[in-house]
Amino acid sequence: MKAFSSMHPFVLMIYFLSVLITAMFINNPIIQLSALLGGIAFCGMLTTAKQKLSDIAFYIPLFILISITNPLFSHNGETPLFFMNGNAVTLEAIAYGVFIAVMVIGVMLWCKCYSIIMTSDRFLYLFGRVLPKPAIVMSTALRYIPMLKRQSEKVKKAQRAMGFYTSESYFDRLRFSLRVYSVLIGWSMENAVETAKAMNARGFKLKHHTSYSSYKFKTIDFLLLALNIVLIVFVFFGVGSGAVAFSYYPQITHIDTSAFSLAVYSAYLILVFIPFFIEIQERIKWNCYRSKISALHTQRVKKEQ
Image (cartoon, rainbow, N blue to C red):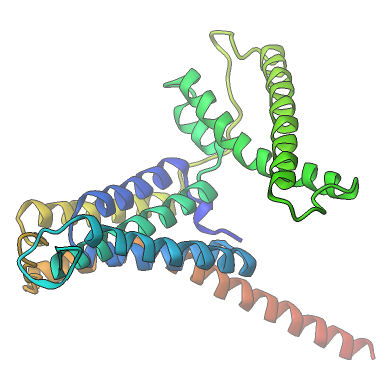
């Protein structure tokens, strides 16, 4: 159950843009940590246990790799810790590498949440009339990525049933993978032709064609949009005033802990945790309904007995 996805697509697009732009372009460790924590919390609510384990196995090595790459290639900073091949490894380079990793992982998690929530039909609803051709290309591309993944799994299972993928040889496995790739290319081209014919049959090229949409702007959408605008404007005002200014080079500066700076950090923290709170509230409500239904069912069984 994804309660946050029931919001209006325009509200969702504004929200994700607000979170991602702030996380990508504001170089402050508190902001980046907030985006990472919010992304972990929200992504954890949207994925299954198996997907969570897969994400952990992917993101932790990526975090370590990004963290150690920067100090190996960047030797800026005024606090050398040790020397490697005659080059200084500085505290500033290590700290910058760690927070680059925090920023990259946080942005990737939010992009994953975006791909789960903002489906192709929502994207097409937003941009179908303003930019019809780019919108249909983007929505088709977003639709084909998961379709290709599912089809590749089907092809692999079929080939395993035929006796392939039993050899431990690297070249044999590469040859089987190329076979799957060639099958997917042929399938995708055939599917693209069928999609184009279906679109022509449904009058996509007509000037006054319409698209079905059941999205309505509700009160909760207006409240979320208003809260989003207030919080992000306050954050941008804090950035413009220098309240969250931070630098890693040539020396790590101190984080501003004034009342105004803390208010800016709190505003962004609230912003990134809004979907998590909505999902938690929906789950609590759903569990309450389930317990009430279970209690009514128990009472009915007792009366029948």
